[in-house]
Length: 186
Image 1: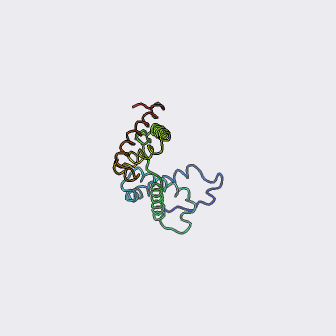
Image 2: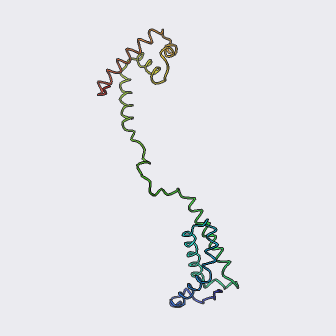
Image 3: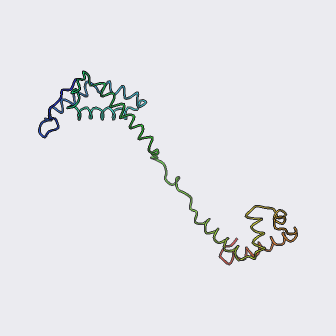
């Protein structure tokens, strides 16, 4: 099919519905099959996507019918192939620019766990630790929060081993008492 320029095609009242229908039918009959085969290769065999691209290509040809053939082209097919290829490339690029869609997934699997309890426990323990004496607080920090053994904590704090052991014992008792006053039982 070689489209003939339609003078004034976009002027009001110059195009008839019968002419438009015939043009679309002619475009489809002559070019849809070969164009679909070409686009199927571009889309990796995705027929639905290929049909959408062919439909968009033929729609663009119909919209630009007044310009096609005006440059002395003998065939419309090279123009159609170029347009279809560009549409396929644009579709591919836009898909890669978006994050993948997650249909059919349970949204609860994506939620973050509620950290409220952990934060409240941390605040309560921090508040209870502040009530301890400085020596008790130091030994608790070294042994429980920094993960040192009692002999390692004794060496770090410069204490005799027996003193470090008794401080751990009395510091834990004082911490337990402070936590009970804050409603923590255990």
